[in-house]
Image: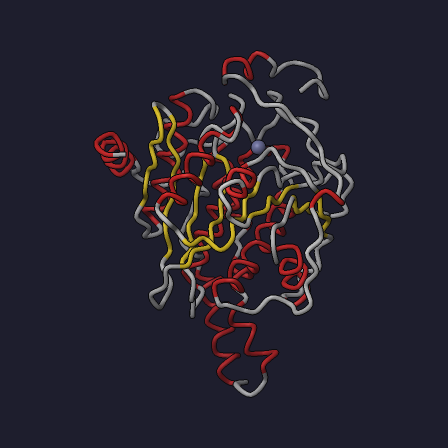
Length: 362
Ligand SMILES: [Zn+2]
């Protein structure tokens, strides 16, 4: 932490002049009007609970155009500051640029950025959105920001974009009773390194984090069924996601898996309830560009990614408002569900050496 973080924070402040074209972190007037309209609607219908709930549907503020801008910057499709693109997110320089973009975007949204430097060149980024009333409870929404030294459109530009979008809209949610941490983990591809250090740090600090929602690869839907996998949802999370999916009218096909090997496991291992959201990685409808040079901006199914982002936004907003979990939950062991294994790279250099290997050899 300490000195280097401040230098980095200062750097990102100084260098982040403006967003690239299309990268507009502020809410569009349309969306603000819509929220206003919802608030009016709910106050006019104070005796109708079904209507009143609409004001809490913060997921309706998810803005696909803004997400496209975030993804374009993260994948090097556009410059995020004049003459500066993020060419890849594996090298020290590429990951520093990525942090600079994420930090600058958060600062433009009014957040105070925290850099968690856990080892040389290993730095997580996170920020906090405090509740409207004081509480020590947190919910964490995160994604790994590094890639295997490629553009990393799906892995994990998609998740990083989703978390940025949720951070963009969640301040609009009123009546938050829980604090929210938005986090971008470093060095996931080398074995969940950043998230493991962060989870240990939060545990050491005695942080009360009631659930961790990690998003990893949520931008591919080859068979067009819209299905989203929830990997190892601890505690109430599987039932809670199913409930919110219905009550908020999203009605997305959700399937449960026992797949580990992503950042949710790092938090689970420290005793925090967690899960990972992804495309059908386990059910074999995952990007054919996985860990290849071709995992670019163009391959991402933005409407699908936006749907997943809406789901997490809705769940986090209900959790933040202490909407109770369904009654009669039965906890079912994770190992009743299918899993898919993966291996981790020893280094970003080693990962880069495999970028041009045929699909399926990763
Ligand atoms: Zn990933």
